[in-house]
Amino acid sequence: MFKKIIIIGGGIAGLALANFLKKSNFNNFKLYEKLEKKISRTTGIQLTPNAVRILDFLDSKFFLNNLFHKINYLSINPANFKNFSSKLEVRINLQNIVSDKMPYLTCDRNILLKFLEKDLSQKEILYNKQVIGTTKDHNIIRVKFSDGSEDYCDLLISADGMFSKSRLDNNIIKNTNFYAYRGIIKNFYSKYSLENDAIRLWLSGNKHLVTYFINNHNDLSFTGVSKSADKTIYSSEDVNYSIPFPADQFRSLFSSENKILRETLDTLHEVYRWPIFSLKKRVFYRDNQIFIGDSSHGTVPFQAQGAALAIEDAYVLHEQIIKQVSNNLGVFYFNKRNSRVRKIILRSHLNVFLFHLKNPFLIILRSIFFKIIAKFFLVKKLMFGWIFNYNPRSSSYFF
Ligand SMILES: Cc1cc2nc3c(=O)[nH]c(=O)nc-3n(C[C@H](O)[C@H](O)[C@H](O)COP(=O)(O)OP(=O)(O)OC[C@H]3O[C@@H](n4cnc5c(N)ncnc54)[C@H](O)[C@@H]3O)c2cc1C
Image 1 (tube, protein in one colour):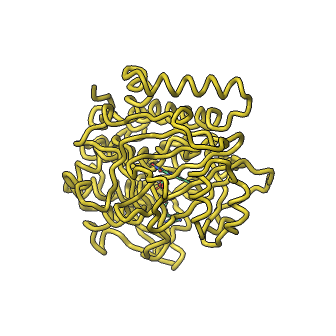
Image 2: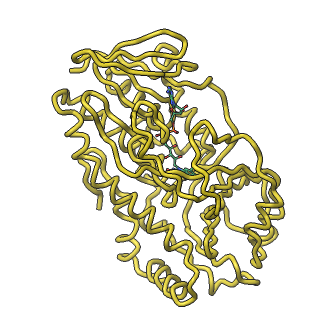
Image 3: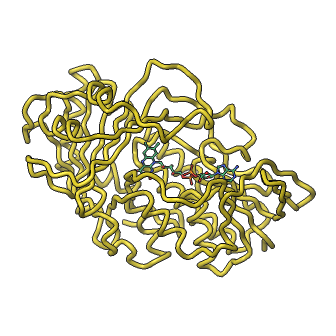
């Protein structure tokens, strides 16, 4: 059994792991987060049923709380047609592949972080503590902080995100040349009476846009993704997430003939932009150091699975720790996670290709493909079932 665990990083992966350890009565852990605890700008996040199922282990029926918003449909639309026609929209009903018990949710990311922080004490999670280095002495890992202090553990968990310094291998970070443009429109009422239980996907050439409501106050999250000609290589330090991007530039970049999309673009005021990165390879463990979340397998966010995978990682890893797998923990964990993570990354990359088609013939084929998914339950189940119905307890699937 491990004597003491240190978790680096208080994002979704690190917080989820701390919660699972605590819930299983493993109390000798510390989570260090380099930032101060503060509520950041509202951004939307999708929580698919595979993530909801695991969070439900922490707090049964947490989603009945009206801070989380239920999604029933995926609506796929071409962005370039003048009039919104129901013939061009493909509506995928998610209700028969997700359930009331394990719904598909959206929320403000801050709400999710607060939910994951609420049961951790100040002794368990320490803010403003930046890890600057680690050294190994036999089975003990010494962790050094920027304020000069140190701590020790016999299992180190890196949950420090895509730009993980503790991975010691930043050559594997790849700039994808995509930019994400994100924002929230508060209290958005459409004159076209949009249902608020749908995720809308707008597809257009080399860009796409996703919109969804994140609560019952009609706050609408939008995320535009477009390829950039800018080949600058960024590092984590270069990316400033808090500088607004000019809204007019965003409007002209995503300008559309579609009246619903135009209404959305005309209403928004604030947009933030940042480059999208991915890792060239997955890293699950090194000696008695384990990687979870984006530090292990950060990828393009086009299947909305990054946070969900982080939550799955945390659950599966905590189960191995509690089962007292101390020899070869990394190998056990790798065997449980590698294949699923690889498949989800492949799907995320396939979506880049599908969402950004330009060739009219391929666009027609894509539309037929989406209609088949929408119409035939078994095809829908084949496309989404394995993502949503993952059973982390046995790393198998619910049917
Ligand atoms: C545009 C966009 C939209 C997305 N939408 C979705 C979605 O809808 N659904 C979904 O499931 N996923 C989504 N994702 C992906 C998801 O946000 C990430 O995969 C997820 O947040 C990763 O969590 P993490 O905890 O691994 O990493 P992070 O959230 O990056 O957390 C890492 C933490 O470690 C801390 N840290 C870093 N270095 C140190 C250090 N040296 N010392 C101490 N602390 C440190 C950081 O401050 C940070 O708090 C999206 C991503 C993007 C870019």
